[in-house]
Image (cartoon, rainbow, N blue to C red; front, side, top):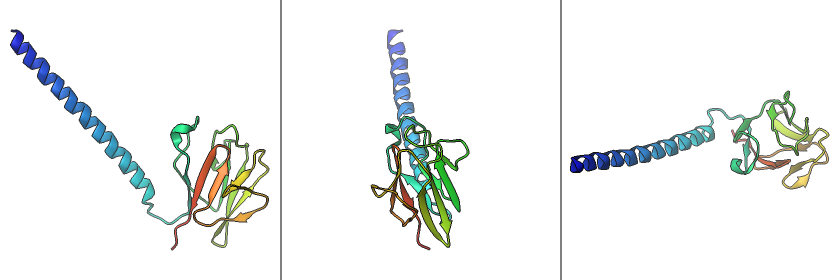
Length: 146
């Protein structure tokens, strides 16, 4: 009886290990698929890409944000991009499109808005690759060339 029970337990343990490995591979595949799906955009609208590691932040945030003609960023619920960072003002910054170009402006934030590590003083034109800093968050502005 003991040898039969030993074989059953052995095969159950091996099946459990294979099931565990299968789930790990499945999760890795799903994660890579999600990342590739976000990176392969089907349309050429400009967007913001999060530069920070999400794990280091103590609030929920998306990896990518598509930009509209006028996009507001802040902590308040009515903003297009709502970020619950305690260092971001209720209405922090605004990105607007005018004649095909995007412009960034600080709309009276307490801690300021940074473009390529320089504090924003006035409305400034964005170009692809610019880094936008708001509170603890830093975004990369991406506008694909048509």
